[in-house]
Length: 209
Image 1 (cartoon, helix red, strand yellow):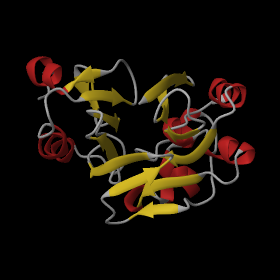
Image 2: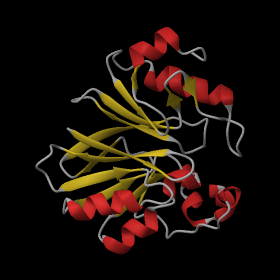
Image 3: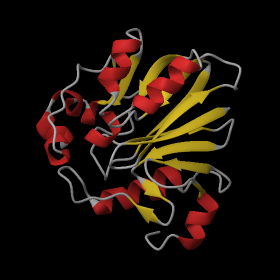
Image 4: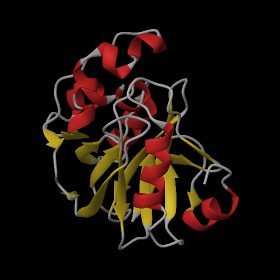
């Protein structure tokens, strides 16, 4: 698997471009955040085709680039969990006004409601519903490659905030314990902010766990 990481916007959000390998042109995007122009430039220079945008949760710093991607690649399908789906279309829900803007996108092409996996661009991800940071937060686990994209659920040495509307620290910790910590310890974690890590490292050193 080829993973290219872009740190976007004032919130330093990690956006991931994921392909089966470096030679492939079809890809998926995970969380295209605010000010996605370096991401767009990379996709154009590499002649890549984003088949899908996978949203780990609906806060503005993770969805801010959705419409810019859609403008250049109109066949791209957006995936988001049903409990965060309104965040795409409602500026009050996605907290964009806190970021000094008003963001409103079109609805997602695919609303996750009971699905257990996503297949796109030759890739397969298990969907792990991990509420706590937001009601519809998800993590994307690829068991064949031993990796998981976890949004703002878990960070290196920390966990996601739970003081936003719809957040719950108790629910967040329960999500991490029941959905993430049960994965193999060698699983590499790609978070929504900051460096990647492993579950083994977080079990040993993360003070919140």
